Length: 522
Image 1: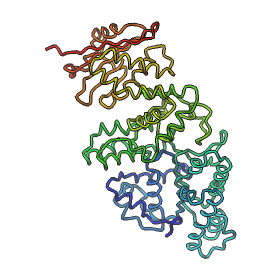
Image 2: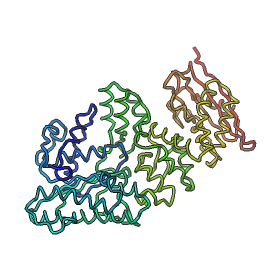
Image 3: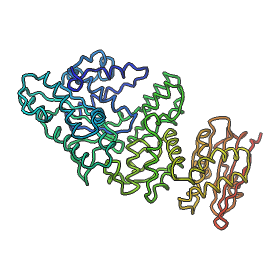
Image 4: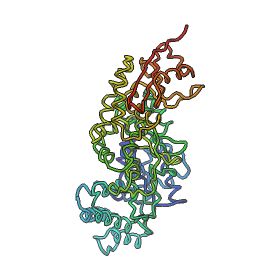
């Protein structure tokens, strides 16, 4: 056994024996199918905290002949799959965490040299009878082993993209690194399987990739391994039952990554953290600071800020992901920035509609933190006023509500403010804090039309219906709520229900507000 060649199963053993472990071992069965029937080169990219390293350690523990993993896998789902024992601890595995080597050297030439030295030391002990031609060339070393012994290798490479994240501007270093990986892996008879993980998909140059032999699985296109990209609904429901946690609250905080038409995934690290700590919250900042997001949303591309405001308001935004160059510096449009944010996990992506969106409450709070620390001074003010606006609404202070909406209008003036839809974005941003107390639904069917905004309380706060009018008056909005009987959808809240009419006058450029308290007729 070694550290790099035929490692032990220690890392995966520790993961399985933690208090909370979700069995994803059927990934092994799927990888076996892919390498035999589809492609033996697989690159899986997904955000931090989504279990990439755990999966890599699982594959090492399963394939490596440097350990005996029966005691681990015999109790997992994979043990029931056909061919389970055929490959268990039967393969030569080379496991490389690229981040470890880069952190020790901070230089691409030194990194490759150190990697070669350490792997050769272990190869030489295992294949001591081989006549090695050049001990400084890792490709030649492995070719020598293959030629003399016919031994083949499974390569598990974690953090494959660290060069592109840490040396964002150094194109020459990136090219050297890609050349190294291509020479090591492409068209080599000694490769049984190459499985790479990272945050970014494989770097493109123009429309081509230096590693074009890889089957790429990402947050943009995850179909081949969809159920393994995060925790599924059923897996989280089981955890919530086991640990007596409210599933709907868990869903609100951490769900929302649209993997396929039928699969939505949760952020695994955040789910586990909330259960262990017995508290829902933003666990994103344990691995990412909000400044990392702030850098990207502050980029000066036409329409970027508009789209972020729309997504904060709950909208989905169309984008073209095809031109993204899979790095963190080549941005030619807002679509490139939004595509990167999908890969980083700050946005979800619906491939059916080609739209992106903010997936859940945890990520929303990261966006708000970033905007409050950014150059969006006006929008920041609207977000900071959100709680005061909510309290003014509860107090039925119509003038103060109109004042805060007025300020939010000015603060979100990056939007084309010329219709009720744009007005609704403003209202959604202004009432951002309401999401802590309400489930907010836009355009809710009521039987006689659609109510603009419905606020269904999670706590003892009053339910609310908000109707918006563009270039009319607030009384018209209140009349419409009553005439179309919108309150019927909130019948059980009729003892504690506010109806709110908000209007924007195009000539005076002023907002007005009327708030009434509805009472159930007994």
